[in-house]
Image (cartoon, rainbow, N blue to C red):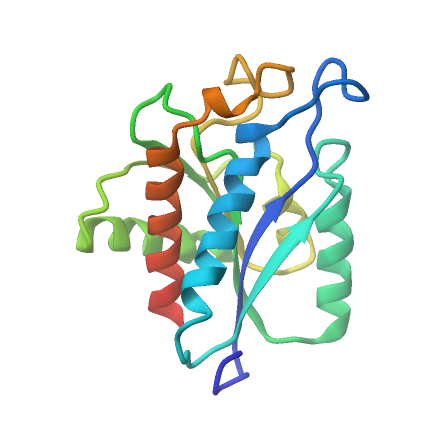
Length: 196
């Protein structure tokens, strides 16, 4: 909770997974247990602080098949009239394949969130190599939020189709870099904390 409810911020992750044998083996360690873990850690840390504005932790299902969960969340959030200022979508942040690269993707009025993440990365010396994109071709939970007028940004190390393990039975814990998951969580934590 926050003292001033005139603004509301969120951190989001999807918890569903898939593979080429989705009903048998779909571990989803990076896509997206890494995002869920980062989001939980951000919530755990910030729960110990008295903050100005509220932070909501959002977990959605059914991202892998049509990005349905976030679409439903966004529709309900818009109808509720809550004063959402920005939602950070944490997805697949545990890969070590591309070093310290993190992809940021936002469009339109949400690009301030990318700018803020870049400034926080530099100011605190987090050391991530940020790839700032503004592409409508990248479809994830944050797109469904923006479709409903909720400002949002994607934070990911690999995008759909890049990883040789995403959406396979090989997306297991051994494919996840714990230090990369931690550093992505740190970057999002510091960014969100700067708003609260």
